[in-house]
Image (cartoon, rainbow, N blue to C red):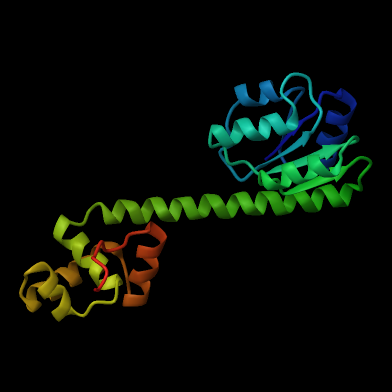
Length: 205
């Protein structure tokens, strides 16, 4: 899905035709406000937006989307771009800043890169959500064991840390591996890193 925002109706039609010619779904808007009031993309998508717009400018829209946590990759197009404008857009996370007139292929390449970035973000969010759901099925004790195991402690050390028998730690560890769907310790460590789950242990003196 490509969202086009340009107050020039001929440019909107031109961009819509270009994207549809390569099989992309397109929704076009004449202003940033229209886009913000419209439906949110349910699939990998990107925004192709003119910098100069009535009301909210393209850069204003970028700032507003950051505030609203709307993570749709943006490609800026402008016939009046300058270096400070480009720098601000790119620092705000824009995928590209193209000056008019630009080549069709140049814009299509930017759209492919932007939608690919959005697809990877969505896949990561799904993975994190699934891992978070699995982590929340763990008991408080199992969560503690997971944190210490992925911190590099041996079963004997975990037992001493938690005041448990070593055999009990082994049982908890087995439960953790099964519930998290981890096939190895390395797998479990990657999961803990993805979830940013770490043991809160005092630093050694």
